[in-house]
Length: 185
Image (cartoon, rainbow, N blue to C red):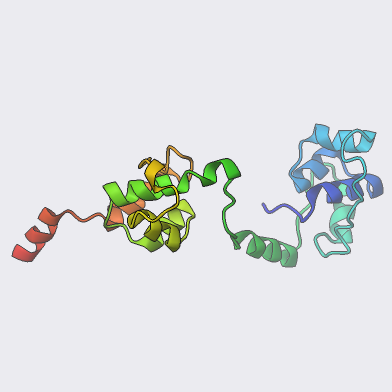
């Protein structure tokens, strides 16, 4: 189930303005009931202004009233809100690489160039999160730090996952013996 937008602010509003149980609010907002109880006690989410889930179309008044009267019932996002939230979840931006890891990218590029030269630059860019200029600089040994570059596995550097790396290597690494066998047949 998709969580509402701004779940803590929604939980604050629900605790302050309804008689829902902590479990109901916690299930809807993706929080533990003790955290919701902390919101009610004023220990958690201090300073967070509550957001009305009805005003932004995430809940209906009927759903809230039904759940207030039946402690076993659970709050559900409206269909419109669920479609909106699920469409937002699919949008991916660029991956953030911490400053301490950024210096490792040229080493990962050198590893690809040395051990898997058949992998295209576009795939290296996607896996490692670098640029084509960096790949060309490492390949041509014009990188500013080329004297100190050591080919290191991007998985061990924490730049990609082993499964994604294996998929790319399997897709783009063709052994010459396999290709000559295919041509002979």
